[in-house]
Length: 67
Length: 136
Image 1: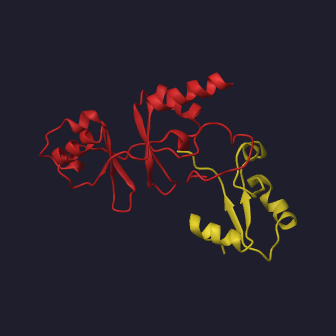
Image 2 (image 1 turned 90 degrees about the vertical axis):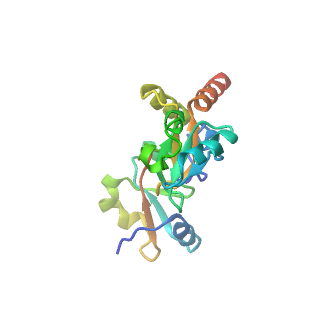
Image 3 (image 1 turned 60 degrees about the vertical axis):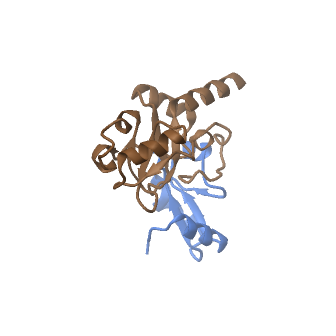
């Protein structure tokens, strides 16, 4: 079940081995992303998520917010 | 990223708002008397003040024009409510274009949940843009 999390919770999840997923297009991911984030563009998430992500670990998904 | 924390990628070396934001900008609350706020702002060497809630969420902005209003008025009657805010990771170059297009003198910088980081001023954005340009 998806749920919103704040920054502190994200950090705790990362310490526990969570997978951080950046859903922006590859070009934008290449310019800027959170340390260690996996790039899984939104258009590919349904087809590639099962192959790329480990279902036994939490997944944190983020996109952009500039203004 | 919205909190201005370190990132990875090809853009990590470009100047961002986190590099030029003034974190010591004066703040005030909605119900304060404008005259009291103006006194505090001037004493601190500023001509702007960010109106925030008790948990530092940005509610409004007092620029020089608003600070000159009737000193007996409460802040919430004279402030510019709901100003546009920008995130710490926005590039200085992009902010320079935005401020130029919209003729903005300053703008609050906030985290993605609206909490104040500081105020970014046009002169600081322009100066950093020129400095970065001269290094290229």
